Amino acid sequence: MNLTDAKSILAEMETLGTEQARKTYQRHGVGDKVLGVSYADLGKLQKKLKTNHKIALDLWASGIHDAQILACMIADPQQADAALLEKWVKTLSNYVITDAFSGYVAKSPLAESKADVWIKSDQEWINSAGWNIVGTLAKTDTSSADAWFITCLTTIERDLQTSKNRTRHTMNNTLIAIGARNPALQAKAMAAAKRIGKVLVDHGLTNCKTRDAVALLLALKNP
Image (cartoon, rainbow, N blue to C red; front, side):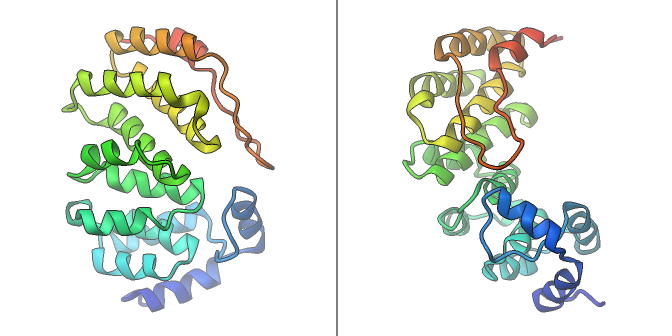
């Protein structure tokens, strides 16, 4: 099939979707508007489409979960203006699309500024998106200053145990990512993790687990 627009791509995705994948997505909190396309097949579509911001916008507008995941894969981070990101972030409804969206934003020039705004939100998925971005930048962006991550650690320590369910999981992962960045941050993250204590998260019907930050940070071998 010639994949030239969102309509043709959605038609192709309908043929790729399976009931098993739909059930898996739904077990992870995705609603009924899902085709059930595997990540392997989404990756193949991404390779064919490469970066295509126009199609990404149309796929996101469909409201179909798998199409929105693909949109995050092919959207151009350099065209991620504030209006678009605020529009998209307000529609997040589960952690799967939140993770995909966060990965896209983390590649954009607005990553740090959007994270700073969203980690202050009282909405679970918006807040989670912000913390996901912080964690991704801790792993991938060499230009972000340690001082920013230290401020984030202070907020994590203060707010984690009183945050909403999935946000607790994301904040814990972000703490670990910050601690893995360098030895100085490792020490600060370790101290924060010990003061925070055990992090409890309800993962529903999935086999997902929230990691032990102290144990992982102890095991790290920074250069």
